[in-house]
Structures are given as C-alpha cells and as structure tokens.
Image (tube, rainbow over all chains, first blue to last red; front, side, top):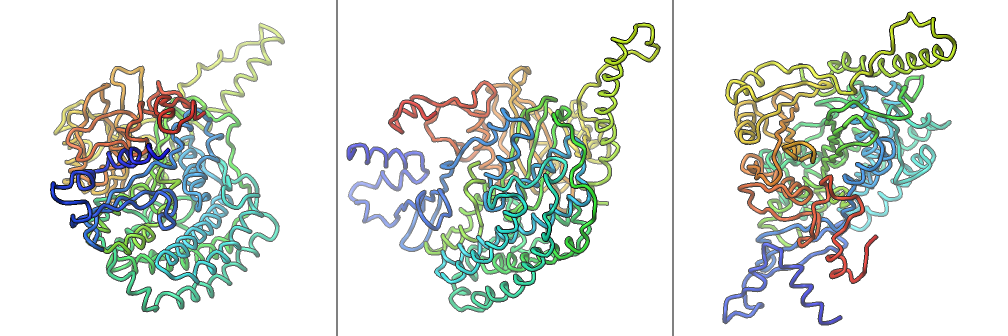
Length: 395
Length: 221
C-alpha cells in the first residue's frame, strides 16, 4: 500500500508540464529552497465544484502558471449516443450540465428537430421558454451560492438554495423529476402544463423580484465582496473571442452577444428583453451580468406566461425516427454559454456521431490566462466566476 | 438580413421530408390492400421507388464560395442543407481556407472543432471546423477528409481555443495535429490504450491492462 503511493504521485505528475519544476530541482537546491512551488489542487476540493484538478505553479502567493486536469467524470456520452436511438439518447443529455438539465434537453431537441425538419407547436415553444428560463434562474442561483461561498460569504448559499427549491417544485410537478428532468421530447413537450402552472410560475416571479434585491443587498455594495472580485480575473473582449468564451463571461467583458437575440430559437424573437453587459471584464462585472440576467429571465417568463397560446404541445413526429442522412449543428444560449449539438446522421435510427459543444469545457480553457499573475485565493474566485459544471466538461 | 440558422429559409426543405413520410406509408398501405383483393385492379402507378433518405442540399453561392473556389480550385464544394452552410475542402488547404475565412471574412470565433470516423471510406476521418462571425452573424462549417495516420495542421495559431478541442480529437480519434503546442490526452488517462470514438472501438471496450494495473480489479465492467 505505502509502497505504491510515491509511485502514484510521481506518475500523477509525470504527464504535467510542471514536472521539471517538481522533480528536476537543480543540484544543491532542495525542493523547499526553490522559489517556485507546485501545488496540486483537487480533484477532491470543495472549491473546484466537482472533480476538477488544477496544478498551480506558485511563487509565494502569486500564481505563475496553471494546468487543468479534467476527465475524472468522463462517461463517454458521445460514444453512448452512437448505440442509442435519437429518442433513447434524449435523457442522457440531462447528465451533461446537471444543474441546467432543461436547457440541455432544449438544445438537443432543437438540433434533432432541425435534422428531421419538424417544428414544435407554438404552445410547446412558449412552454419551453418558460421552463428553460426557470432553469437559467436555478442554474444562476447555484452559481451565486457556491461562488459566494468560495469567496467566504456563507449567507447567500442558504438563501439561493431556498429559492431554488421553488423552481424545482415547479419542475417536479411538471416533469415528475427535480434535476434530471427529461424535460422535452423531439417535436414538443411530453405533456401539457399542469393545472395551476401559470399561477405557480407567476407567484415565484413576484417573490423572486424581492429576493434578487436581497441578494444584491448582501453582496453588491459589500466592501469585502468588492475587494475580492473587482479587478480579479480580468479578460479583454478580444481574448474572450480568441479563447472561445461564451455566455456571461463574454458579456461581462462587454460583448453584447446572446444567441437568444443573435439567432433566436424557440420563439425568443417574440419577447422583449435586454442583454446585460459589463465593462471591465472582471469577476465583479460577471457577477452583475448574471444578476441582471436573472431579472431579464423573469421578464421573459412573465411575457411568455401572459402570451401562452392554446393548442397542441407536440408536433407530428414518426414513432420510429429515421432522420435523413446529413449533418446539422444547432446551438442555444445555455446558462453557461453556447451549448451546441453537432449531429451526423446516416439515415438509420441511431446517430452516427453526436458531438456536444460544451460551454463549460471551452470556458474552462480560459482559466489559465485568467489566473496568471493573480493570488492563490483568487483561483477559487475565478473558477467560480467561470461557472463550470464538471459533468459537462468531461461528458 | 442576418443569416441565422433559424431563418425561414429552411421551410422549403421541411416540406419534402415531412410530407414524404405519410405519402410513402399511404402508398404502401394502398399497395398492400390492393394485392390480396385482385390483380386486375392495378392501374395506379406502381410503388414509388423509395426516395433516398438524405437531407436536401442546395448549392451555396455568394462571395465566400466564389472566393474559396477561385483561390483553392474546383475541389472546393459549397452546400447548404437545412439552411446551414458548409464547405468541403482538401485537407492540405484546410488551414489556408480557415485563415482566409478568419482574416478576410471576419470569422473570428471558432465555435467547435471535431472529427467523424468513417472506417469504410478511403479517407477515414472527416475533420469539421465550425466558425462564427460576430460581424455578419453567420455560422459556417468547413470539412476536410483525412486519411488514417495523416497529420492535420493545427489551427491553434489562428484560434487559441482550438487547443483543448484538438487535444480531445487526438484523445478520442488518435488524429495528430502538426504544430500543436501541447498535444496530450485530455479526457482519458495519459497512458490509456485506445481511442474511444473510433468506430472499431466497442462501446464497452476498455484497456484491460490499465484497469488491472491502476484500479487493481480484473474488469471495470
């Protein structure tokens, strides 16, 4: 047992680009004499939001370099898709970003609907918008709670999880499940809204307005919060685009781009909402952007409930789905960024290739340049502000 | 007008495939009903040959395709299916094509880079780059077929975001990228044997030796 441990540790680091720093210390120097220190953080660390391993190269408190090691949650979802039918694969996408399962379901269903040239009925589209926006709120709530907790503000965590319960209650009544909801079907929704759905949603919206103000009272003007987030993890708009950052981090840097506006899907063009943007591209601005996004989501939900049309919720889709051969890419604005599905069909019932373009995976790539030169304590703030979910990073 | 994916352009394409299904089944039903009853009553046209189940493709014309064809020869094919534009190019010029698209047509955001394995084709892999232009709000795909074992030029020099995407392709398919700064496995363990997304890799296949050595069990299944 004990014999294997050093070997494992060396093997664990052997593939790291910091291996030289760790093991080939110049003669005459012991490891602790060296100015540079390599510190392993995770995969079991509460601030990495799952099984993310970050290897940090430090000079005292200052971060010189980082390396992310991912893949601990790799379940081969893209491979699994190839041995499932299009319909069977639908519930699997809930397991990508498991705090935003409804969004994943929407992205997947829209991609397949594009492939088979089916459009969901208007009522289904509106229901999808309401539920997806509720899910965006739930996802941002989890982000706010955990991000604030990482930085040291414990109180918001209890508030946001209390309020998230209300959303999950609606999901439970609607789908029968709270997290892995299997929300939508290819061609629409599995069932119509339950009696009292609109009332539940509007009651939640009215309460949530006040609660968002409460969160802001705790954080927005808080001296400690500002000190820990302002000027931390700054990234320029050009750098965002080059590294492929999407979602709130992109908007936090001042790029006014949201797929719901740029390429509207599922009737988003019917609703009136703003795209909040930041100025400085730091952690504080990304926080403000997400808070404002929650307000905009409430606005969209209210409009969708008010304008909810009558009619069927499911389009005519053959029971055995054999999409035409070809390939399709479709993406949506998930809470974390651009979530895309690239589907290659060979004309059979199973996808030939199912590529998920995961926002978390690609956003995480920016960590390295965002933490360079920052302090160790800021690393957790920056991981938090990127809002990654490891289920989606590793798939 | 913004050439969004969800424009009504796709509607014409929607008609044939949705309409084709019920028609074909109806025809099959009538044919079934007709045969046992009597042979003479068959003036109707014989069963329609099944349409090939393929997405309707229309040629993509415009500034970008003509420029690509002019610069990179007639080997460039440009097509639109369900309102989505893509160009198929030879893999030797793929990097130049992508550079042209980035520099001259403002496709400054690499949305995704991936690969597909076609073991039966002479060129077994198809590389796919999905690009987006913030300026013109359009998304296009560039595809290039690559032979087994051939090296593909990295696009990390054009878009740094390609770094992890190419690492993932290397991990999942074993395609090597020439000029990549850090080509290591990313999702699978570094010393794992096998590339899971290849078609000859079974869904439950594992590197038995690795599992035995590292997990201390006979099988992870």
